Length: 343
Ligand SMILES: *Cc1c(COP(=O)(O)O)cnc(C)c1O
Image 1 (cartoon, helix red, strand yellow):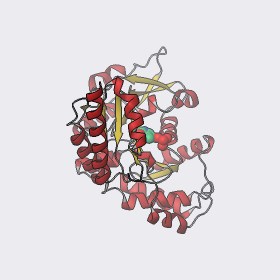
Image 2 (cartoon, protein in one colour):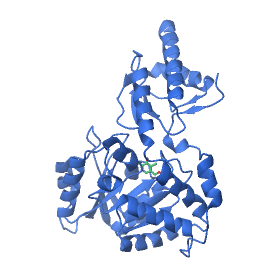
Image 3 (tube, protein in one colour):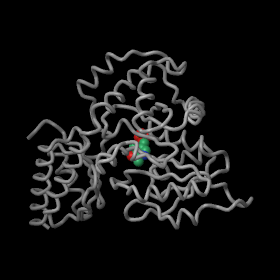
Image 4 (cartoon, helix red, strand yellow):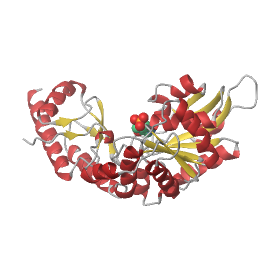
């Protein structure tokens, strides 16, 4: 049995490797609240350039970059249109409402992760004192591992702009989407006024996200970042890891997609499981409820970490190798062979 744990819970679990740690160790630093940390500044310039924006802002988390974006786009009593399944709505503690006085208008996501254009249109409120002012359309790409189509994004963002709304992309995994589609990062973010990108997911940095947008927007965002407690001092140590990630870890996301496909393919041979074929590095499968508890124990024994449940998410990343995928398939196959024989 291998000593190495295979961790399929999330791509947030990646460990910074030796080369990334060396870059962090070497980083020139200043005080970023004064704006004079050269490594943070370089990361922000690099990100702005790569994703096609005037400026960028480094912050401790994607939850914070999304919140900052919404707080700049919206004032008190404004609202944003967002998918029911979106991270900003569902997994960020209600921050827009709690801290931003911004009302979310959640809208059902379609099976492909999009928000129907007719729904966007229908939820934009008329100018009437009864209604919150609809200011922003927020989309997420990838969403639950699914890639939004370029035609859909063009149509949705054009519709929003035509109706006077701003557009924000929660692009936590936009690099996965771009790599999957074989398009540039700039093409992947086209149509969005602002984008938040996670450096600490598949890109492998230990901490941090960047918010990209127009210079004036980022200047305003800097005030909210300070208020939210995201003004960091010698943050160049962290920014160096983010720069390393942007410079070295984007193209290799294709490996994660190949590994996810191989894992899904291998698991699909198990009758008890129903697999949703992955588009990128995340996929979902249905597990019989009665199998969940013993499966959890079996995976633990075999040094595999996963969030086991009747609807289970599996995620590949730079610390999951093709060999790890083979071992995982073998463990699942052996478990379900036994489970079927004994049930
Ligand atoms: C991870 C994630 C975020 C931000 O999460 P943090 O843990 O706060 O960095 C935002 N949106 C999506 C879709 C995410 O997966």
